[in-house]
Amino acid sequence: MQSHRQLQRRLGVFDATSIGLGSMLGAGVFVVFSPAASLAGELLIFSVVLAGAIAYCNAVASAQLASIYPASGGTYLYGRKQLGEWPGFIAGWGFVTGKTASCAAMALTFGHYVAPDYAIPVAIAGVVVLTGVNLLGITRTALLTRVLLAIVLATLVFVAVASIMGPHPVAVGSGEGPVGSPWGILPAAGLMFFAFAGYARIATLGEEVKDPEKTIPQAILAALAGAFAIYLVLALLLMAHLSIGRLAGSASPLLEAVTDSGLSAGAPLVQAGAAAASLGALLALITGVGRTALAMARERDLPRPLARIGGTHTVPYVAELAVAAAVILLLLTTNVLTVVGFSSFGVLIYYAVTNASAFTMANRPAYGPKWLNAVGFAGCLILAVTLPPASVLVMVVVLALGLLGRYGVLRLRKRRALSNPGS
Image (cartoon, rainbow, N blue to C red):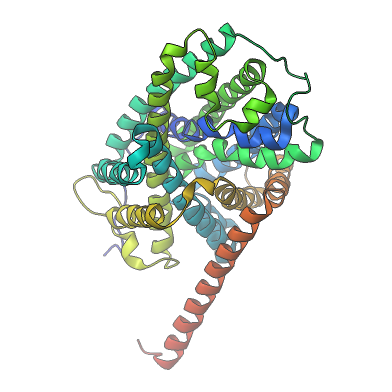
């Protein structure tokens, strides 16, 4: 008898690419340029390029591994298969904790855009509704993601047009605002990486993708290429349209770019787009965290009930409900809008394990040479340790607690096995 049911392969290239692009073009694109500009100043564009380059290394490594391990769990699974149980656990624990906090941040961003005076109740309602969508099956998730992605893309095109129309009161390099330094590029790139990390969702859905050996690499690389082009263009337009000082100090730079243009009447469209982006990112995040929790529960690194799959749509309903409960708890108890750095650190560690796992592969595709894996591994660690110190410290403590907890559980299991050898 099988110990667990399998998920169903229902996603093609278009659906998988939509989920990845919808994850990357989430609420981060509406807020991440400001904190990155405050660190990098007029050198912001180099941070975008650096984050994109590291993301490319990670995407290639993910594509290499996902094509031969087409099951739920992403790098948690790859790390276990290629490096051993402990590296796999570090990747999975970093992803689950960091991305659960990101779920709360996306939900609260949605609440602030829709109803600022009732942000938390609206955020909780969003989590409940999207969890319900996920419980209806992965095809429903993909359909809603495509709808939200279309709204976000239309919004970003509108922002780009408004920025091109101007006016352009301050040219880049005028000296207004932070000038930036090479050292500021690194932490800014680490924050920008927060907006690039969505393609991991494609790998975590490996068990639900048709023809995974071809579909997953195509979807990952296509989603990343689209996101990189959009971020690069937006960064250049925002730097030309707003002064670097205003860009660094704005809580909503894309909205300001519209209100300062001849298309200011379209500001509500930007707000609607930000709300849709938040929902799209939240939907994909809940899906990805739930699948990683499912994989960890199958290996007994998380409680076994999280591995249950049920219903006519074969979804990991216990894991999905547990993630929703954790996100709601964070919304009620934590200021989650400060977790961008925290999440970035966890995900960079996750991708460091991805690159290390890909480096050990004996058979590799032509697009994934070993040197690229080595560059990705080093780049992830460098960006991680140069993030704001508070983010690094919090995530190091969280990772340490997870490792200590797993060590204690393994010791307890071993002790029980020795005391009950016949069981």
